[in-house]
Length: 304
Image 1: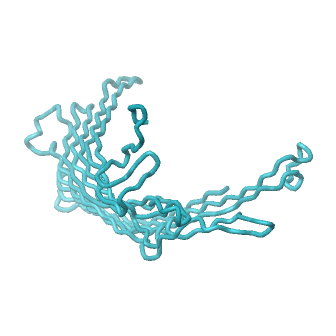
Image 2 (image 1 turned 30 degrees about the vertical axis):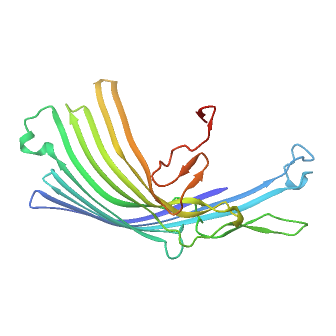
Image 3 (image 1 turned 180 degrees about the vertical axis):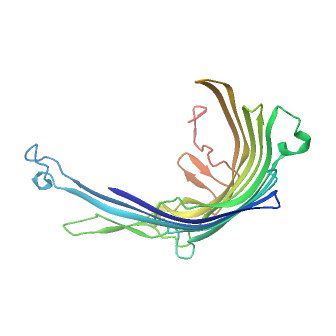
């Protein structure tokens, strides 16, 4: 087998400081990538002699298989950063992504973000607070996309190897869905960063991530001959808090003692679906429920 990926990136960076306290940096770029996976297999057993590995020297008929898959991706991106007195920061970004994973009318998606940071510790009223090394307040909102669903999810696919009485055959293995398009995520984040005594770091974040047009295999009636078809099935929200604490307790010569702590509280909820309900193994997805909530039968007073 052979798995080859190439990526070409072109970018231009520009930074300018003016009026002493104002700094602007700008980035403009383009990236293209292509992945190809080739697989060839030949198998045989019961050879005439132990040292003869010629496939034709086996008593059992040879098993052969071969296929390849490809994926291409192109992106145009830009970013603008503004910094005033190392206290106030503004970040803007925009990108346009194209993926071969989607159909001819849905290959491209536009995504953007905006963020701001206030370094409170640089304000004059905190200059004399010696135990406070750094203090930041930040907020951001933006969108992103997802195309990680295989390489040919929108196309109708045939499978080979269904031979009968010496005649080659093939079977329709995957339904086409030309309306398949980008999954979009809307992400809001509000955070606080504190560094104390130059050795204790605390980060507190609140996030709200709304995923729209989620890419899932939507179940089908067995009368269609297929179990499912890849679709933009639902919308979902994840929200919660994340707290991280890192500290350097001791650092002397070659000895270093650090402590790391992290906790996340997350709430998941399905907010819309294009079907009434979907049963996926031990889960049942429906509006208002948790994507990870179990749906199984009670037995002897217990849920199995």
